[in-house]
Length: 115
Image 1 (cartoon, rainbow, N blue to C red):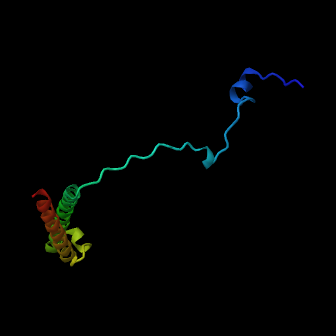
Image 2 (image 1 turned 90 degrees about the vertical axis):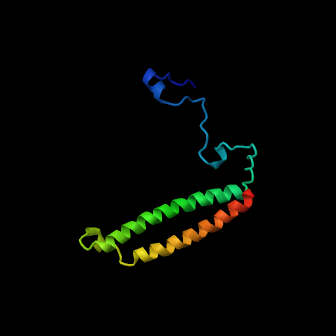
Image 3 (image 1 turned 180 degrees about the vertical axis):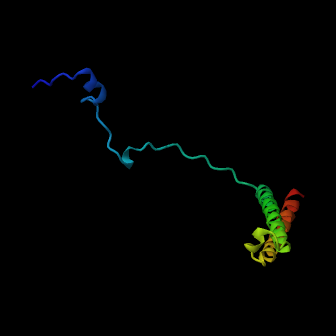
């Protein structure tokens, strides 16, 4: 049996009959068979340094929030002062103290590792 020849437009938009399409699914996903490279062990000094940087950033953010909360508490005419809870500066002071304690411990570790 002979198949009818396709015109140029039909040939351009249809898939050729001799091409097989892959089934969609996990079995056809390309997988990486090379073993993954192990990460080098990070030293305690490097971890403490990163933790210290994070604590410093957190400390700066807390100081900004605390200053804004205290400003809002002190200014009765400040519009946002009505939306800020009165005790938020107390809560931020507590978080500030916790971050300072954490920073103190990390700095001790850094000093011990560098010695």
